[in-house]
Every structure is written in C-alpha cells, then in structure tokens.
Amino acid sequence: MDDIQTGPRYGRRGWTQCLSTDGKMILLTRLNNRPITVNADQIKTVEETPDTLITLMNGDQVLVREAMSEVVRKAIDYYRELRTFDMPAGRAAVGHAP
Image (cartoon, rainbow, N blue to C red; front, side, top):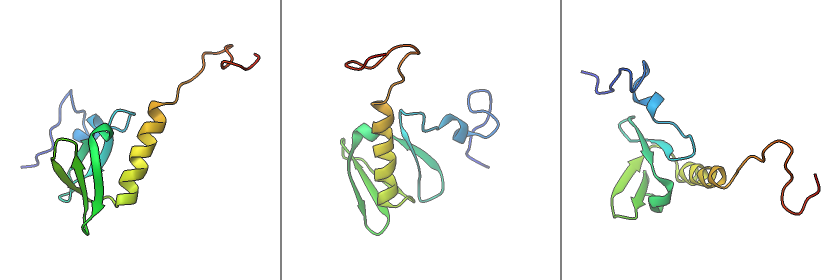
C-alpha cells in the first residue's frame, strides 16, 4: 500500500501539496525518496558523508538526497524570504523620498 496520504487536507497529489517551501520550512528528500520538511532555524550542521547528513539542534539527524550545497542554498533562500517584505503601494522606504 502506498503510504502517501490523500484527501481534503492533502489534496489529490498527497503530501507534496501540503509540504511547500512557502518561507516556513525547506523541502528536502529522504534517501527513500519521501519528502521531508526541515525547519531551517533548527539546522546545526550539514555534512556530506558521502550522503548529506543534517544534524538538528536537538541532536536528531536526517539523511537527504540533496547535496550539501543545495541544502545550504535552500536555507539561505529561506532566510532571504524571511527578511524580505513588500512596501505598501505609495509608501517610500525610510530615508527615501516618495
């Protein structure tokens, strides 16, 4: 039996619709091809052993298919998204004339 759940909460595509990179978590792939989201704030270290091993702040470890550079890039993108905001229309940034 396929272990990907479907239904109203998960949509027709299963978990992948629920697990998005909407700026809250980073989407990665376990070695068995199952998707996993990781809270970028909880990543302590990332190393290639030769598989990519992520160690979290609580000591948990996760092996993923993505290369170390890809995990780092996704974490950087997460932080950029976190610190980016849109200015309301008609408002100028502080120190800049409209």
